[in-house]
Image 1: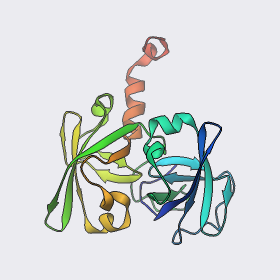
Image 2: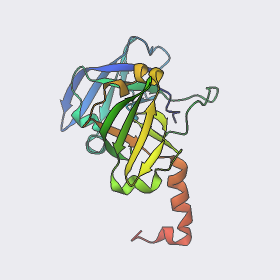
Image 3: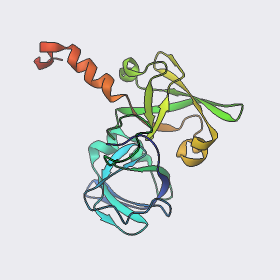
Image 4: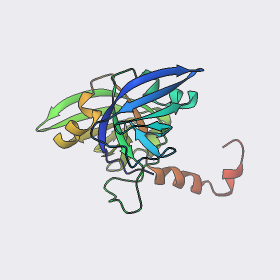
Length: 204
């Protein structure tokens, strides 16, 4: 479980194609991995990956074909910058919202402009996710917990403050940038709960 508060940025220091899928090595001088055990989870641009190797300033993770299909990881190359967050502990502050690290779909940045000292973005989500996106609700974009300022169909708008711009990969975004999206977990469970007994029907 994560909060969507980015701990540090890292970069892809090695990418290997292994039997049809990928093994990544991600390095970060600022995150620190001495407290990370093999099998721990780290969110990388919002995608929960399992640590299989680690050093003091890097870790390696295997990425399945399913994850490559559903996230932007398939587009990453050596040197690509990524947002990083270690799995939360029970004693951590809960500064964002409940984030599972399971990507629901990929969106695309369709507009960007300055808005005083902040940056304004419009992102287009896949149509099947539009029902989970609400005005002043929460959404995770590349692992960052953000508040939705406006919704228009499957498009939603964000206002990003300077702190977030400088401490996440959002500062790298331009029109056309693909992004990982995770919608609010509560909305997902509520949708299923409202089905009642019909949830057991195979056609749903």
